[in-house]
Length: 257
Figure 1 (cartoon, rainbow, N blue to C red):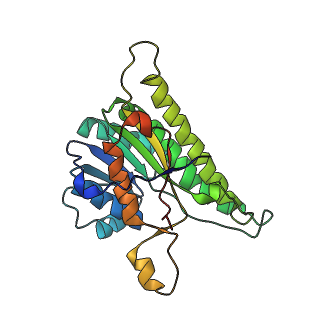
Figure 2: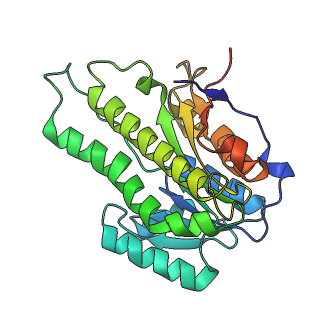
């Protein structure tokens, strides 16, 4: 599976005014970084998480973010959120899916059912729900963008991380299907063909790192980890790239040695 290197676009030199972007998993370290970068670039940020207090505590310094609590594993709750954002903003232009988590086991036989339930619910089911509910809005946007964060473990899965790699691989396949849907409906349409304007991509990392992690383990080597700010800049950069070239790309954010 080919992986395209990141472009290195800086969030500070892009304008996203007039665009509304939903960040799922917004209270995580990566979510906070992405939300701040999007708002700094002028976007209206809809920050979604399960815990209202955590959203408030982590995103309190954003100026104009719309903080929303929603259980993204529940299709009905996601549909209600989608309908509300359609009415309030006329739909969204971007969806950055950062919901996930890690569970490992002792080899193939050590892969536990409760770990698999956790992984498929957080990594795949939440993506499936939000992408279905917001697909039409992203397809209708002049600059529709959807992105997930996947893992290098998809390319080199281990027995101990079998469940995690499998869930990430399934999420990547789902995004590729979304990309094909955008392509078929837009530039690939036989009738009423139009320029490609919506794109779905996969960001690939080994793992993410933030300043708190570095402070907690000052002697640990994080050189192959992707800083959350690099992810944030890449998310903003999606909106200034050509949709036809971007659509379906698997973009590596792994630091280059």
